[in-house]
Image (cartoon, rainbow, N blue to C red; front, side, top):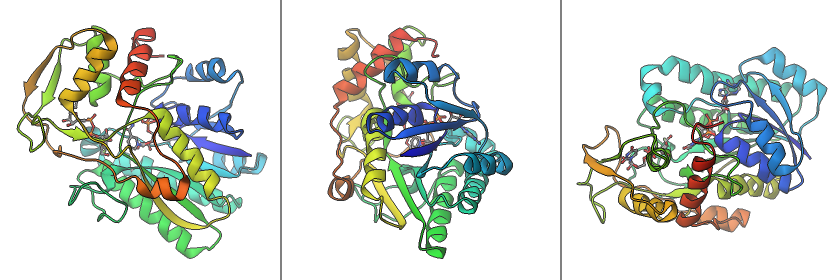
Length: 335
Ligand code: NAD
Ligand code: UFG
């Protein structure tokens, strides 16, 4: 089997290419390199012992997509390509909607014209907006708090409507909680541009000496230690969740949504402590005001994926911090 992986040189897409390869599925990567490095390809080669096909291109380029689908046949599209910075989406909403929403519509058009009927979409727990109850299951009301989040809500709606209009279509929306970690080889991981927005890469860069100290955004939340709680999931568990979703729904159609998380929350201070243990050094941190738009606590009810896909996470918080640290030490400047 062969699948097109949009955004396949990015953080989650590249790790999913490894999981696809391990499952005997051939990924063909399409990426415009707007937030990734071409050097990811050589790392994939080192890990998998094989060169993956790569097409430099854009999901908004209908002409190019039509050519790709006419030249090769695909069993599905794994659709990771998107812009993902929440703060930036508030500054540049049109750019986010154009890339994430219009880009997906263009992709769906080209798929439809060429009889590619299955799409696995990178969604996010952000589509649940402010949690109304915990753990969050797939029935939780859908909302968003920023343009990035709304772009995910809109794409889910478009995918659902597309499936409604044509009984051949299958769309699986995977709602990720907080992806962290790196491949256990230490050859591949997350390398954010500039100052990291997310907790784990910020801690990793502090541990390696690139940042002076971690700011803990808020210590007065209604949680065990007052700091924010999230459901961190190892990127390789997440990658395997994609393969499970695809392989378990080969014969199905319609719109389906699954949470991909561990079901367990960790506070900011617990993550800092786990990283200190993995890196065998103190991580300097200071308490700071709450970050605007943050919620106190978020974790998944991941039982649906367990029941329907036979998938559950295997890797622990110690695996997540150990693998992040190995990658950060090997490639402190990224790829
Ligand atoms: P990433 O930025 O590392 O990867 C996205 C990739 O898509 C990049 O390689 C980028 O160059 C490419 N891309 C962007 N726009 C494109 C376009 N128009 N045409 C072709 N390629 C394009 O991000 P990631 O963390 O790997 O996220 C992958 C997906 O998962 C995204 O859809 C993101 O919204 C979603 N997601 C990520 C997280 C997270 O915390 N990382 C959480 C929930 C959901
Ligand atoms: N945090 C700090 N200091 C930092 C960075 C983060 O204390 O320097 C805290 C946050 O306040 C939060 C926790 O660490 O309590 C996790 O923050 P992240 O930024 O790592 O992750 P978020 O849960 O805020 O956001 C993630 C994704 C978003 C997505 C959202 C909901 O990054 O793209 O989950 O799914 F929208």
